[in-house]
Length: 296
Image (cartoon, rainbow, N blue to C red; front, side, top):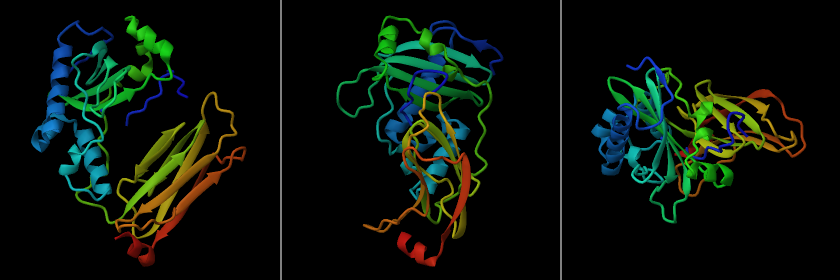
């Protein structure tokens, strides 16, 4: 239920002017495609040095933080992806825009992640940032299965639907996270949210912030859970088109590394369908020795 665009985003990849030009104008297309292809090759060949050379500083910190927050090995876990980075060959370059030190390239076509099945026409958005040369900063995959009219429009070469704000580069250098983990956290924690018709922001220990909109998703808590008292804060707001009667669930779990051990939610805020939802709230949970003994 985004207000800027009908697109449901499902996947979770020294210029002083703003350009809204199509691909093929100027020299940016081969430059950015070259950066992406080098990053993709680093992922395929599992090359840590090449990965660090082609990946933005912000993204490197975020990836490392996530890996250490799940107590996984770094850098080996960088390359453990659920799907392969797609090849750009065969895709139609639809939009390329540069703004300040940021750029976005939008592709349309049969995006193949190498997981089997027959790829259908969808959208791939690649983000880049200028850091002593252009670096890969992330990707978004937009599935058009629920938008057949948009898919048909794009297939005819009408890319006007890609002019919404969410397809534009920000123009601002992305901030590097203040938290930069140097090794695995003591205990793994995850935030779970089910929030149809709403946008929920959850913050754990005032350092791990999670925003989930109109979705059901779990995310790892950056920095993990602390021994002792841990703080949870949340805000909830309704999205356009929502009925206001949808159920809501916000939970925090501690993840055990012992086989077969599951620990109940240590924090929970639940609202049944039709129930009254608080716009904000907070709470705590305690990770004492008895709980810790179940985790590792």
